[in-house]
Image 1 (cartoon, helix red, strand yellow):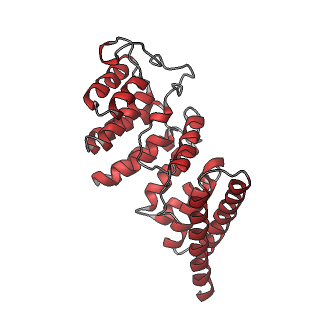
Image 2 (cartoon, one colour):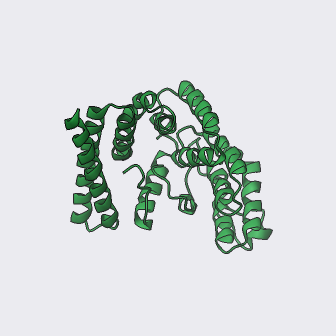
Image 3 (cartoon, rainbow, N blue to C red):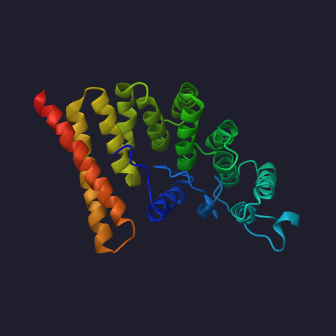
Length: 267
């Protein structure tokens, strides 16, 4: 189940909606798509970003917005879009949306993970609860072979912001790559994040199984399955998109749970 990264545009929209809600207070999974649907989010002070709209040609306007930059990038005018985003970030250094858009350009278009890392770390410095940035950072650190650097940064941030469950979840996921047993406390705390409980229980189960804590793995996958089944039922009742993916999640979790139970019986 942990290997199931969010697929399908309908589900990606759900993840982005969660990010909008958590921009200043509170992933998943990440589908490595553009973050253009985050346009209009607020900066950490709770006030709208200054660069929301602009008339005329965005490449010649002093008020070009993030939306203008997104439109240019989507049309293939990447350098022009990057210039607008860099101008916005220079004028408004706390504009996490501009920084995130730039980071995604460096990931998707320029294939420059090192520069993306720098931008994403700036986002986390501004807003340590930024779920999309934390998700992307995890992948970038892995791509760069810099997992230890990522762990050091997130450990520092969790010490600075001990109440941040988003940070603890990101730290726990990353730590589980090296020391599953040590990651368990952080992953257990992450199960308190309302819209990520299923994923947190799944990650907890995987870490527990690797650490030889089979009973904890069984309990965690049992919780994850109950949540996934409820989400699937609600999606079908409301005729919401994404039911096929939810069914895949349910099936995968059932399989993992059955395997863990089999191991428990053998013990």
